[in-house]
Length: 119
Image 1: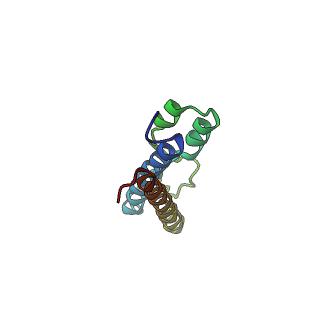
Image 2 (image 1 turned 180 degrees about the vertical axis):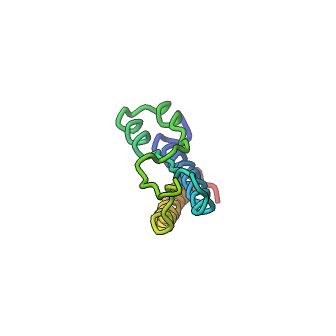
Image 3 (image 1 turned 90 degrees about the vertical axis):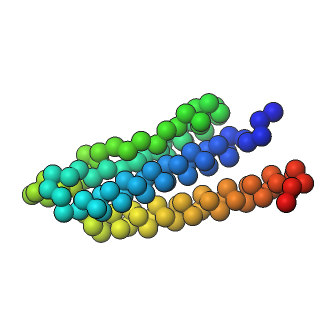
């Protein structure tokens, strides 16, 4: 029997994805005025959803959030594809998601500790 269930592992992968996305957003914001810079994003929700649909522990563990160039972002005349307002909204949304994930993980860890009689 495994100590952590698939949900706990999925939460960890989602937390890693949100962290990587925050790095991509920070890079986008830092390069908002860099000519030719292409907006980057990290998509991990669909991969996690597919892994959970398969109900496969190894598939969930194998979800690796990766930074990608966002080819759908509109490009300015200087070739830059970063919009400050869009990035600020993405940063706020991602921050809320990260906080929610940590709250759920904290609650699940407290339940696990209680079940083990620790702390």
